[in-house]
Image (cartoon, rainbow, N blue to C red):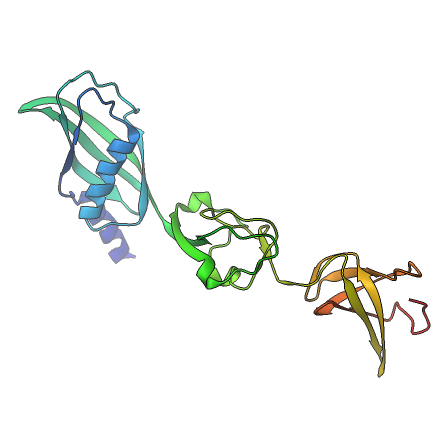
Length: 244
């Protein structure tokens, strides 16, 4: 507890080395420009894998100076516990100071998540070769986001999936063993008795999922579970004498 408190206090007091860049003449001072400066300075101070968001000052700011302005981030203090940072943004033209602006904002650590490196069509199985990685802020993830490659490798695309975005449990699922509209073998097994018949699947089904099957001639419909490739097993609700 004491060591954690000490490390937080040290992070609050640690001044990162100053980092500067030039803002071209007549170009507005944008959030992207300022956030890049803070990111570079955090990187020099030993931090990496984060997203910087500036809350103060309100950006963009207009720039009527025709000459380049040297922008320096000074006195950066970053508290990893709260994710907040503060600093001073100093603008200089030539040897003349132009402005000093207090800065505040947030630093969010990034997490690496698997994404698709190429488009995948509906029904395709995803392999490790299809995957790439992307750094995102935790706020961009939901409780259905897939963040582990094991959740994707071997899964089947439920729709056409584009590359580059974070996938969810609604995008993929276990491989389908039974395809809707295709012939299936219906198996009834109970107390050593095993009967088989042919039918047409009314649903798609992965292993263990419920599937309705219809006899194309008698139009009798039963429900079972997918147990193999184009195979559905039914339970005791279908009696051996049923005219399926």
